[in-house]
Amino acid sequence: MSTTSRGSAGKRRLLGARLRELRESSGLTTVEAGEAIQKSNPTISRTETGKRKPHLLELRALLDLYRADAATAAALLTLHAEITDAGWWDAYKDVMPSGLASYVELEAEAATLKVFALAAVHSLLRTEDYLRAVLRAGSPTAPEAEIGRLTEFHLERQNQSLLHPDAPAELIAVMDEASLRREVGSRSVLKAQLERLLRQSESPNVTVQILPFDKGAHGALNGSFTILDFPDPSEPSVAYVDSPGGNLYLQKSPDMRRFERVHAALRGSALDGPESRRWLHSALKEM
Image 1 (tube, helix red, strand yellow):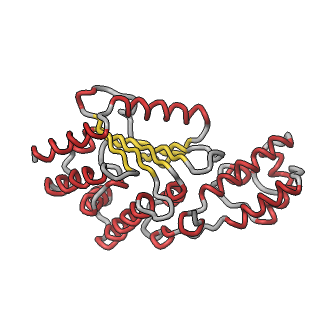
Image 2 (image 1 turned 45 degrees about the vertical axis):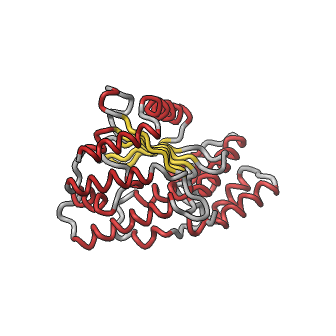
Image 3 (image 1 turned 30 degrees about the vertical axis):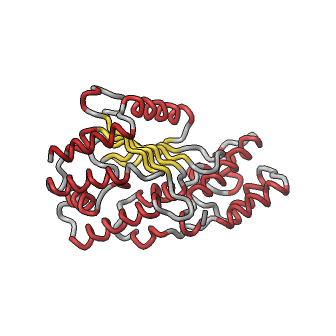
């Protein structure tokens, strides 16, 4: 996978995880490590969670501090050199909401995306008109040019994630019936969206499962979420929750086990692939 074309989030996180392991093996806290190389505790923490790339001199200082052996130091210096912040999304940073670039970097590195959509069709599965209607509803006073650029960004994001020729991501989407009944844009926009979902559900790397109203209450009534799994098994998975209060990233083992359990339960309650396609056919006939 090309780092420049798909993003560096995974490699930053891998470098951070290795540095955390070395620090813990050396018996130092993040505060002590920061004081030793004249960096703040938050800076060390952000490095270890992959939110920033350390400067080369900083990395060398940490490797010396942690007494990394020659082979480990060489491997981490090589990994550091492979990290670049360039990505296809850079061209859209002028219109992207705050924090979205960090998520897109993770998404670009993900091998599997396990999502639950509660209120609207998931953004990776939206038609252009549906995307535009959602964006306009969220920013009613935004200039039309800005809405157009954001729509273009999300369409490119779909291509990069699901249609990338090197390594298309696998998408496992569970969607509450509410996300498919809401008339976004217009009735014709919704109809076209359901038709597209039907086509996409037949793609080899896309699984669409619908959770009907008659299944009753479930474990994600409080909102949508995404679980990102990465190609390297040593990279910890991440749960992402987007809300009006901000973006939340979780990767501690207890949190991940909770999200995995919820998603598995949602899949178990939802209609399977063929049943979901029959549901979509039926919904389209009603329109």
